[in-house]
Length: 116
Image (cartoon, rainbow, N blue to C red; front, side):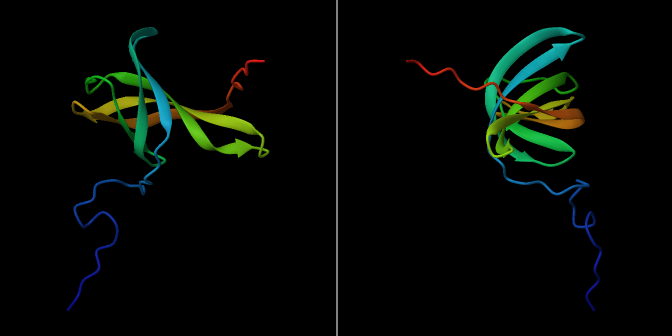
């Protein structure tokens, strides 16, 4: 007899589905309002509750981080967007870090200047 346990009973602790989105990002490790470290990376996967991303150097669990993610969709099919997410680092290793999102907002991206 098969028993269905539903989501969360198969060893998966996440409450939301993760999507394998890979977008460029910039991160700032914050201590209060001061920036302790800044770097660049790429998202590995994302959900409404968290983001796993690559890092240039190992970050520390428990610190707050601000992410600025280049979003793949455009506003009105003409204006680039970025996701600004603020959260706490919940796990990390030498190559990746994962945050639990506390706040987020979408902003428009500044268009790159073109040389004439």
